[in-house]
Amino acid sequence: MSSPRPHFLVLTFPFQGHIAPALRLARRLLAEAPDALVTFSTTEDAHRRMFPAKPCDGDGAKVATDEHDGRLEFLPFSDGTETGILPNMAFNAYLASFHAEGARTVAEILDALAARGRPVTRVVYTLLLPWAADVARDRGVPSALYWIQPVAVFIIYFHYFHGHGTIVAEHRHDPSFVVEFPGLEPLTIGDLPNFLTDAVDPSNIFHNVFNTSRDLMETLDKEGPKATVLVNTCQELERHALAAVGAIDVLPVGPVLPSGNVSGIFKQDDAEYMEWLDAKPENSVVYVAFGSLATMAREQVDELLLGLEESGRPYLCVIRKDIKVALADAEAEMLHERLKNGMVVEWCDQVQVLSHVAVGCFLTHCGWNSVLESVACGVPMVCVPGMSDQRMNAQLVVRDWRVGVRAQVDKGGVLRAAEVRRCIDEVMDNSEAAAEVRQMAGKWKQIVEEATGKGGSSDRNLMAFVDDGARSA
Ligand code: UDP
Ligand code: UDP
Image (cartoon, rainbow, N blue to C red; front, side, top):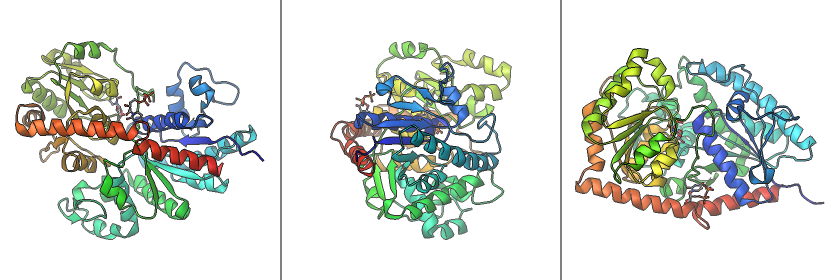
């Protein structure tokens, strides 16, 4: 009996920072396995945004693409809402509905694909949908978690729900209390994901993220020795953490770098900013962006722009439309008039920007995708971490890889202009320390390039995963 073609169903939460690395992984799978099929699935609303102009063909909302010889298809699942997830939406309620309707409709997708003679041989799911593994198990399909944060953060979550939770919960109001996790340098409570310190509280707006994280770790327990975790990192970036993961099959397959604005959530500015960059000297520009979710109050925008202006260096700063809208209209319009050395855009192709020779530093909120993109492009960072994994990510950047500095915010959480200037100088001026950071950034860029290149550690791991998929198919 001939075995069916390897067919990966890649499922993702509808955030830019999740869709993008998931889609890039999907493309890598297709590149590694020339006979494989991928069905990529996120929520209906996100799906519509990704394909505003594509007519849906017969099979419900399915979108077939010409890419990879038609081996990549898009088929959405439902989150039970009309609108999809909106900013300021009650996140706990959204996650509950996402779980219930998601699990039901992903099961339908698995059945429909099997009925079409293209049974799924492996489900790959990102964070926040642990139920995907249950749905897959019910149908006898093996699954793999795609962890889109560092292994270090995986270890924190894993051990939190396997014994460390009590001590963390006990000290969660003391940001300087030190906790030790296997394979990681000592961390403080303040370095841990806020979902484990604040969201443990049932009244917290992210309490269901806490519950979902717990479910995710329980899911891995249920999978037992079969549990596979792909991680968007590479062996070289997180050697100690990887050595400490123990029995679970953790495969670093990254960095898989998202390309372009795949989620369709943001309207990209015209590429004028690329011409603007072309006119700037090598390593002279400060690039500033805080990812797809972080918000900024008026005061923060003012301090940031003031600090950038005072640094005297050219800068390219992303201020998303939703942030501008939240500022008073007149003020937002005046934004551009205040800029002497810089340019503000609402959204750019970040990988393209970071790859530009003119960019000499990235002032970042330390979302994991942004960090990986900066490392892969050899750009030193000024870290301004906020929520989730960002504080741990900043530790990796500053302490482990020494490719950046950490900015301090004031008591009210505001990053002041003087601190912006100080940090930028620290990685861009002529000092020995700055030269060292730049040198380390160059070194890591090369290491990451080798890891993801042909025969590199991540490339080999991905191949092993694909072969394993073929065997179980
Ligand atoms: N690269 C990466 N992660 C990936 C794929 C590629 O960092 O998942 C890097 C890789 O090191 C290479 C460059 O991006 O130097 C171009 O990759 P590739 O040849 O695979 O081209 P693409 O995937 O963009 O078609
Ligand atoms: N990004 C982009 N253009 C922008 C700002 C961000 O393409 O103007 C991309 C960035 O390259 C990254 C993603 O948005 O891939 C943000 O993901 P990250 O994990 O850094 O942060 P999150 O948005 O999840 O907080």
